[in-house]
Length: 271
Ligand code: SF4
Image 1 (cartoon, helix red, strand yellow):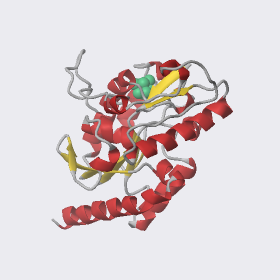
Image 2 (tube, protein in one colour):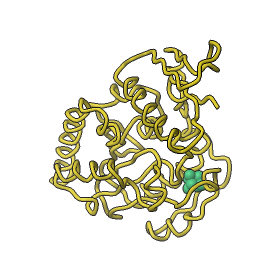
Image 3 (cartoon, protein in one colour):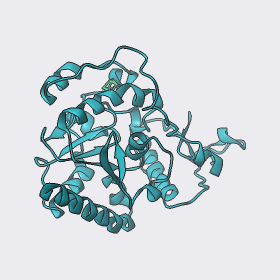
Image 4 (spheres, helix red, strand yellow):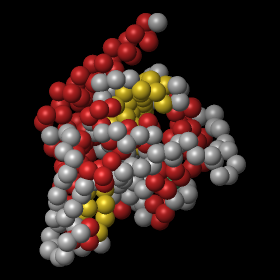
């Protein structure tokens, strides 16, 4: 089946192993897109006719109007009664851990709420649980999680000092990109977490988290290097640790982002 992600068309593979390879390749191409390539061609296995069904084309127009056209997800009028407010993360977690608001509830192994301090001054937000997270019920485990730990250590933090979560609490099958309806269903959970924690700073890890939180489709490379705001909370954007594992060139800008974030944190702490 042909899928589209960002400006990229790709085919779903027939089994998990191939799907994982596709996922890694797709992520690699997305990173290239973030570096500014406007047209990316990726043929995944089959050769057939021309056009999108051949799995070979992606245009700059697609890039502009693509995937995370989740814009306005946060600005839409709520369709039902407002979300209830909770007194603690524990209470909130207990209330939503069996959530069935979107179809990912049918395919998840474990619900991944988030982890860290309920009084964290910095909240890191990624996109969605991956395979390991889905199995363990914890965010950012595996190689990307270890790298995030190293990044935190470099700025003299541990996981216990911060809070780590995702836009989605359940894993999208084959690690595909979150769909707009899933984001729309799940964002109130994250918003409630942030309301309870009341962080001083939010750090969006990767394109999807940044696009969801900032309601934009601007390439990640252009969102870096400046401060944004999510519901009045200063927000900084940097690369997802999984991207750093594949692209050495992202390490320096990520380090710069972390230095900037730490400096702002210290300024807040002193003030
Ligand atoms: S992804 Fe979010 S909205 Fe969907 S079932 Fe899981 S917790 Fe609920």
